[in-house]
Image (cartoon, rainbow, N blue to C red):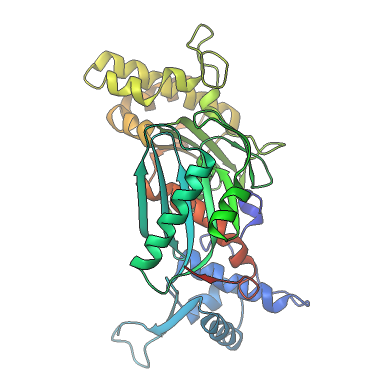
Length: 386
């Protein structure tokens, strides 16, 4: 499964593809219906008719089939006072989950994310040293076992892993995660062997943007630049015209390694003066009570945003982690500096905002990658008991 959002199921906040008249009609229509409920549910049958373009009788049959597959639940809506029977509401069955793993330099986290985007349960373990791929997989197995005991009856579609580093387009190989020390690791194979589940691996910033586009602050916006500050440095991702920027080999969006200072500090990537060497969590914590130093870091953030605006012409610049926190306390400075440096004449139309999903962002994004196959073929993907 590509990280290209356009190749995945289409969220309900965009136009859902209408049913076609070919041999794949049933599978296509099931996909359209489950996709609409996944991103926009709960929905009435009337709303599903509107969103998918299918007639009411077809919707009825599809809802029945999805319910038999255990993917949706249909029940009565609350009374509204209107004449007639209350509408039936179709909602995702929250017992259908994906496992989502995020290994980082300071902790490993695994969550069970329901098909409606809700994080039902999570486990987190702090680490004194960056975990190895085997450490991360062993933690995932134990955490999944605990969650299965905590919430009986969950059925799992697969697992997604959000890794802070370069991940190849195959959705399997971590080419280089310098902060973790992982290089040339087929992490999909390692994790799939531990969990005995289908696994997809991706860059953590790409997955974070995927989550915010599906359920958070970027919902309904199709040209977005995302910058996230975390323990592993600065990750980046871009969505251009509804398509995730991946680059020729899957390595696009490494905005934390933009060259900011020619005489700067040496970066973990081997170069000097990268953005994350100038603007990082450790430095931000050290100057938290120094107004002048905070202003300088905020100006550096604005410089980076202005450069990205020149390159991508985005409708939204989304800031997560410590970058979002810095923006919150220096918003007027950042906005004014970006406007001063802007190349485009209508820079006031560009929104700069913080992410909305908080600590759930990477888990939701990783789960979205795992759900993609089910959304494309609801009757063709097996679910297993957790």
